[in-house]
Image (cartoon, rainbow, N blue to C red; front, side, top):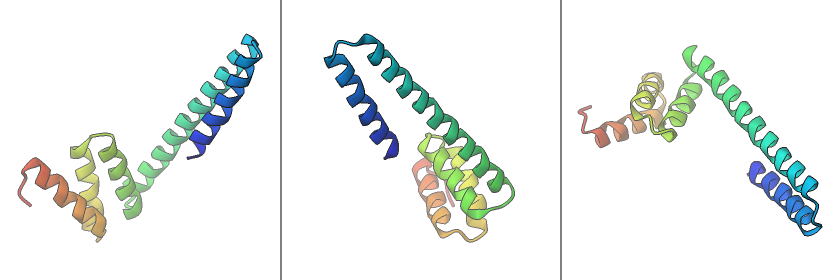
Amino acid sequence: MFKYFIAVIISAAALIAFSQNNPIKIFLSYQEYKKRIEAEKENALKNYQAEMEKAQQGDTTAQYNVAMKLQNDHKPDEAKSWFIKAAEQGNAESMVNVAIISYRKGDKL
């Protein structure tokens, strides 16, 4: 949500600069937008890496979160393996997701 708010603010600044026929302000607004997007990507990667470390150490919630990220990235086989690890520790949501992925692939449980 926050990134969309930032994008709107930067877009508004660009529109103001454009309406004032100031190409330098337009360029600087665009550069600021790009920097913020890159910073968000870096933060997301760092968060994912931290979550992966916790998952590898056996943290059930982290295993579930990693699995959800992989599932959202259209990697169901990798997601399923993390869901299984979390399900084996009693995570009910992971159990459901293992069943859903298996059903979609036609696997037997």
